Image (cartoon, rainbow, N blue to C red):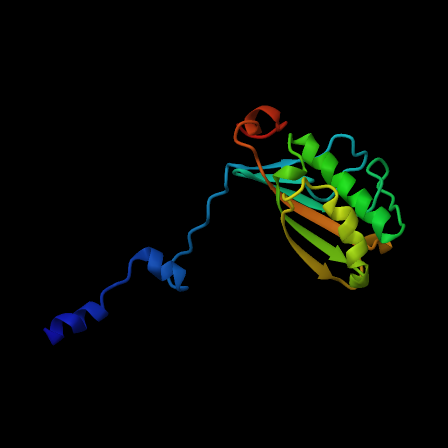
Length: 172
């Protein structure tokens, strides 16, 4: 019996196990055919990113700074103004794919001064229906592009009943 167990230890491992541990050929992961990129049409400049990326039932929204969508220039102001601008831009991105703030399931907020949190939060929470605020992470950062004070990004879940009909350019 001991011999049978001893022999089992030295059997060749299947190819998938060898590849996983660095031995044998590596398999390339196939591209996901359900990932789709979408950009907001009213934006005059071509960004080096996608405004929205769809993966299955989820839409991932790029972080928005306080900037004018038409010309891309930063709109610096106090934390309330910059939060409002970022949320308005995210609202436009949500609307462009047939969603609204009630569909947001996760948000990340990046702030250069966390002492402004309460003032930011007052504006931020006003955009969501009562009791429907998403899961959120708020992070203090050293600086943001253009000297802005805040950047916010979202993950939203597509509505099953509306997703195929209202999301432009979304794969069906």
